[in-house]
Picture 1 (cartoon, helix red, strand yellow):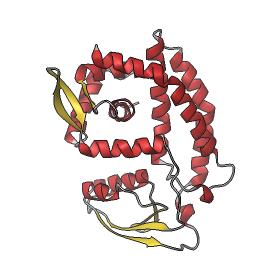
Picture 2 (cartoon, rainbow, N blue to C red):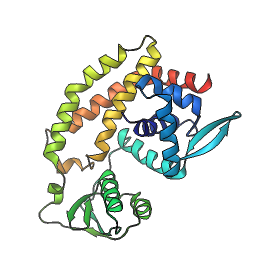
Picture 3 (cartoon, rainbow, N blue to C red):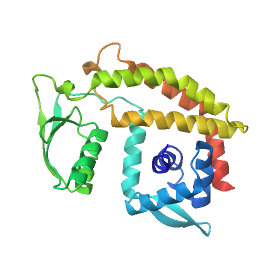
Picture 4 (cartoon, rainbow, N blue to C red):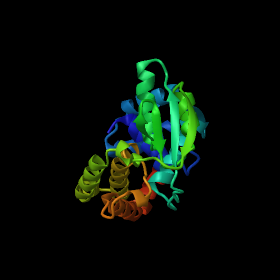
Length: 258
């Protein structure tokens, strides 16, 4: 697990509802149980500041870091996909983005990753498709120095679901369901403090689940087969995350106030 990724997980899953900020010492304490050393935490913080994800603040006289508005938008969107309260009703249309990408290769690579994260797939050269309009599209285009014309298609023939690799996604969900019990047992048994153990186990569970945000576009149920493993995987994730929540929250609060 990389320190930058762990910080995103920490801010998104534990600090988003706590003013989105924490002292540096608290960040170090919180990431220690998941194997992130203090120097790596500080280096990741510096990089995330440069990238516009964190900003320095003073908390009770000590240096701390708060998620920026840009980061908060991204974390809120991610939380809505990780812990969905309702399912989006699909109206049967497709959202198209005809993208003019940036000229430099690094920018194009970053844009491709960002659009995939939002749930778009490339239907043709620079033509991206999603069953839903994604609210974060405009900010992603601006950040990646790209522009786009958008349109809504009432009919696409054939259905563009082949733009996503659903076979690979099915395999990934099956593998996750096989590995999740062992992952939880390992981390629950690796810490003497039960609250710390619950925090570490839940942190790794969410970290592995969050990877699906980059692979699963959240296609409507009517476009997925009846035996789609993502449904059962989501049920297992939600149940285990909730089971560990109370003890994990106690550990977080302890680290933030000690």
